[in-house]
Amino acid sequence: MSGPVPRVHRYGPGPDRFLELTLPQGAGPAPVVVVLHGGFWRPAYGIELARPLAADLAGTGFAAVAVEYRRVGAGGGWPGTLEDVAAAVDSLADLPDATRLDLTDVTVVGHSAGGHLAAWLAGRHRLPPGAPGGAPRVRMTAAVLQAGVLDLSAADEQDLGDGAVRAFLGGAPRDVPERYAAADPVRLLPTGTSVLCVHGAADDDVPVQQSQRYAAAALAVGDRVELRVVPGDHMTLIDPASGAWATTRDWLAHGRAGAPYA
Image (cartoon, rainbow, N blue to C red; front, side, top):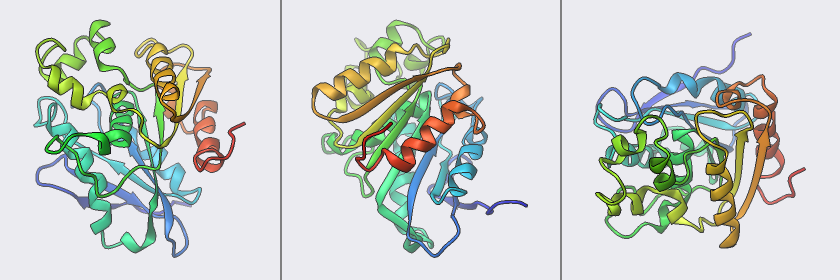
């Protein structure tokens, strides 16, 4: 038996500015989970990575929103990618199905570069006036960061993704410091949201130190953050049949609203 059919909504012009909303059964309003795919902000990877997670979440009572966005070389990078994910989230308030969405309970789940974007969305209300993606209409109340690239300066120094951060922001920290200041999640703390950082112990693409540093920095300024290092590699985290994904699902069900996670 097939599940609910996603509804496609375009939040801007062009082929890559759209989201897919999958509603759960019932009249709602349902809590919302936004799902952001990774791929080091490059166009070789797209929304197909987010769809299995969105379908799984819709089956457990969430309104699931898989987001596509422009990536480096396709109008994305700085500032297009950030502007896109911000616009996608803000557009939820204007959807025909908005009455079925509980926009006071919005969690963002992001993997790898999508984890960066998820953490950035959680903290973008701290951006100065005029910054790309600032002044959000819809704010995150929780975030799950799956092997996220969460410290961009450190990621650039480590050359993660063969220069992915420099391609994304258009230079090194010394070249475009203002872009790093506006795009780096670790510089937007505290977010005031509940956060789960989950990372595969055998991840060879994004080192676990990225999650460890972010979690430590967030805790130091009073945010509620939990770190779980789980068996598996980089891609295990987005396999709906994996124990790593079960960790995320359990936290979404029991931990995101402030209850102790166990």
